[in-house]
Image 1 (cartoon, helix red, strand yellow):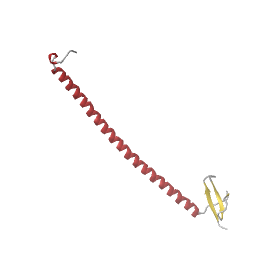
Image 2 (cartoon, helix red, strand yellow):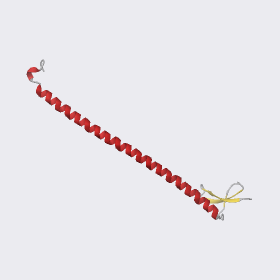
Image 3 (tube, rainbow, N blue to C red):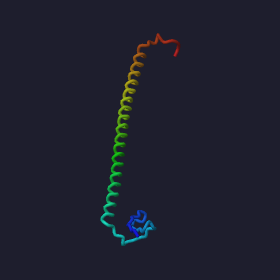
Image 4 (cartoon, helix red, strand yellow):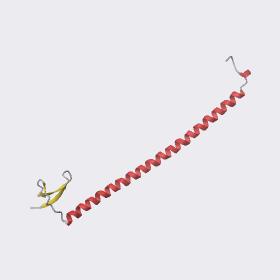
Length: 109
């Protein structure tokens, strides 16, 4: 019968498995060097996947921040243009009002 040690994550313990039968708790389950190495390789690969995911998320977040920053700068620029346009219109309105003499108005106010 083939026997292997399997880590059961839900039980947080190693168990001994015989011929794909149900696993039983086995505190005496001793991992061989090759088992430990296989677990290490799996762990390292999982770590690399997590690291790659974090890197991709960081790049994506930086890209989004750059886009938001540019949008904010553009909105600020447009707001300043609008303020200048309003100021120009107010000045033009005041100029036109000063050019209108009371005699040139039509009808009673």
